[in-house]
Image (cartoon, rainbow, N blue to C red; front, side, top):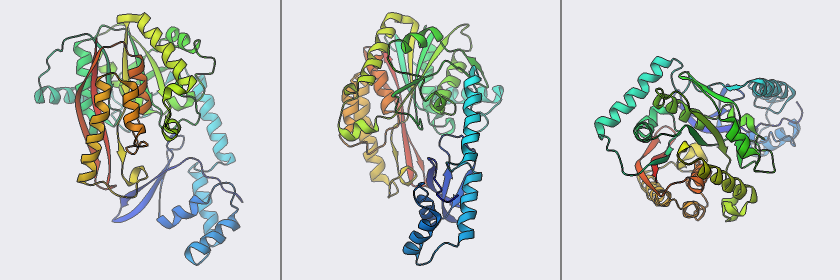
Length: 408
């Protein structure tokens, strides 16, 4: 391969056998391979842009390190990356085409994280959820709030770190909801299209069963917008932000005979943030949210909104140079709480501006999903239920997350 080109790949530092190395993996989970490489190798790989020839790469390595990379070693690295499906090659294209074809033909979006992030057996997963709810109840007995529950903001961090906040959110739903249609806004972490909102008609499967999508509502939403809301649908295949909500929803609604879901992936607002523009200045965002808001109001008590989101992502794992410390954690919490106050007031613009004004220093991955929730939910007030931070000492990084409930 004379001009190697790297696919979008995640790279973050990890500790392995006492050494600091860089972990490479496919964020879209088309490939399940993980490679550990040195910092020096990362520099070489960074030159795999489809424009540098192998000779160009060797020349630039000599300028960087004082010596060239032997041709056989470079070819070996290229072959290793290609075998891992990390390169934009014929092998990768053939593999991806088969993945796309299989996904398009399936009526059901199979669980992609069962057996990885949570148990793939129903009994064991039920035990997990029972434990989360029991521990939350022991910590703080439930008291039914005044008002009708209209929606939730729940984490989408893995259950082992965020299960207590999932329980905090979903016990509200367990006690206080009569809806039969659940609109789920999930963060799209890795969609390869600029479509701001991505729909799917596929049912969602977890070890607890299959949740049917509401095709009638999905078609109604799709018909209100003059562009293809299914462009980029493949992003649903491995995205966990909706899958985790469906699993908890299935657990809470196990006694409910009939309900349907409306899964909506929300793409990044990064470009809007960098330009200092409101999402409302994007005609597609504005039209979609206005149209969906009208549908939600027409449905009245039948509909419920869930946003599967996390808050800040700070530290070397997320591209920052410095590891987080106590001062950083305190600053993150202060900024998060400021943003969440706007959420409690159902102030979508205020929430967005609290992040835009810092150019998304915290890297709030739930920005678009929370904005969509605040813009469409038929509620009068919100309440912060709990907040936490998951620190990763080995990477010096942190993810923050919260649970909120909305009432009318």
